[in-house]
Image (cartoon, rainbow, N blue to C red; front, side, top):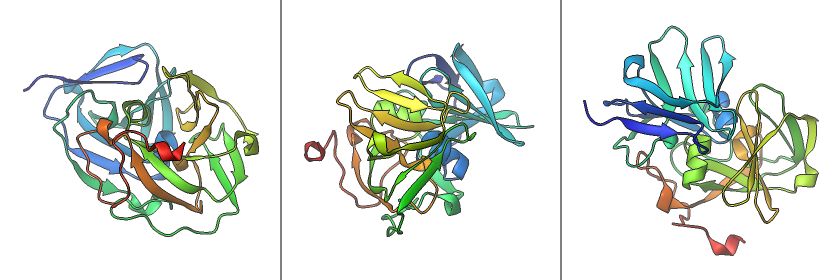
Length: 261
């Protein structure tokens, strides 16, 4: 057994350790994982006896189905754990792991439920007409709409987005005033850079980001199909996790593409 691998949420309110060997990473594109993470979720797992919580002061759990519950940080909204009923194993976000993991992504599951703005493997698909966008968090405490289409979607691989989403984020610029809320229950988390992230305090779903400059973006995975969106680029590849590679031939930026503003 090697050295324990440590992981955490972004704010440090939840910290965990797992003793090797860890299962290789599985990426899940089901609607629940998309809602909670804001894009799609990637996880490793170990038996309970090789997993331990080092810090759990802000850990919350949401029963997402009769078969499983999901763990998240109630302070920063990070999507962290998936615990199936009757199994002595726990899955944890690969994006939450610190440093080099030595893991590989070995499978993509529930691809039929993916968002229509990306393909799990290969180049993005074509867009569908979407004059209006409809979205929600996983538990339904937040329901919203705004004029479509979603348009260009940017994937961000920075450490902050990895910690909060559990993998990497995918979002699009929107006018905050154009969002109509049918139900709203938001908790905000202020980042070190002065931005704010909005998430559901009941289920942990990632919903939006407001930059310190006031620019506003929404998490693409929170929206129902059709979106009229298309993944167009990847940024902050210098901070990407070591457990995945990109094969969609889209533009990749090691930091931020300044031409995007």
